[in-house]
Length: 88
Image (cartoon, rainbow, N blue to C red; front, side):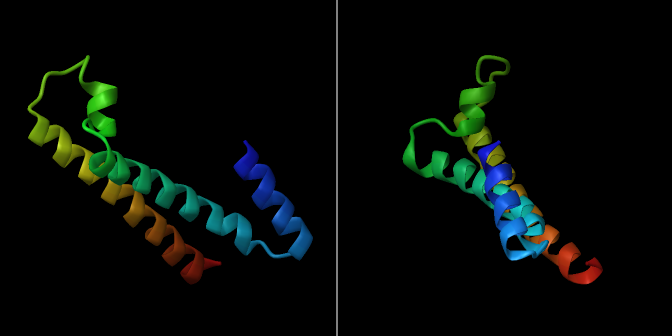
């Protein structure tokens, strides 16, 4: 919620819609970073923490799944920038 308020205020202050358009990319990159950081900094990846009580998988599979989700969000942020550049 605060993220929306901050970028909305910046957009109104500078009269530039690019801040709202970039918000989605920044949020996706942050989510991707969180997934990847959980892989590196903790003993359990974020996906493993969320899903291990629902499904039993080897740690290697959870690690791959976590890397895929992290990469997905980072790529999605770049796709959003491409769409902004091409269509807005």
